[in-house]
Image (cartoon, rainbow, N blue to C red; front, side):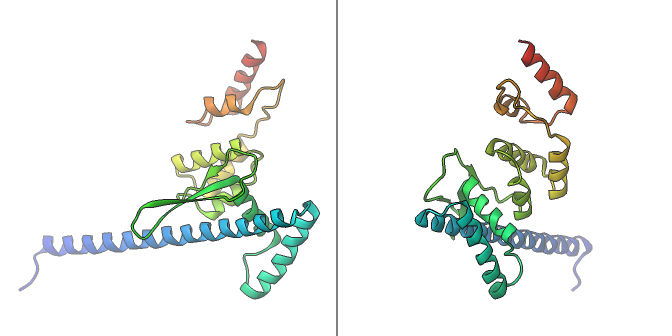
Length: 204
């Protein structure tokens, strides 16, 4: 007995959906594991420098040595630049939520947080996104672009473009970045809008 056309098409759709979901879960899990691994590498580096009370020069030498050894033993992906950003990843993002085997969200938190409010890692962004975010000058700026990238579903290229297009210096007469971040959190105005707002604030 042959399947009717509708039954067959439904079966194909169900299989296609199942495979699509599996692929999505695989990509999600790989990204989560990668982020968690890099976050923990940063944790180990920061923990060591705190225990030994390394100064800036010693930290730099540590990263150079680690890069040489890890590249020789594990291959690509452990340049001094990469390790530097893994360290910054841990320093800026104090909380790392993940799902355990029961599907419940658990949170890993930095053991020795630095003097900052700390950000939370989102699995919706890739390591390449975070690599770009960590080039920002402050945690306020990182948080702003992180949330924008998540809400607007930006690719890494689009995130880079948005950052390059909206570079505005806010440190004028003591005006805080928070004014602009809170005002424009839901959308990104053009440069003229920001300049007009700055002029308005200065004239008050």
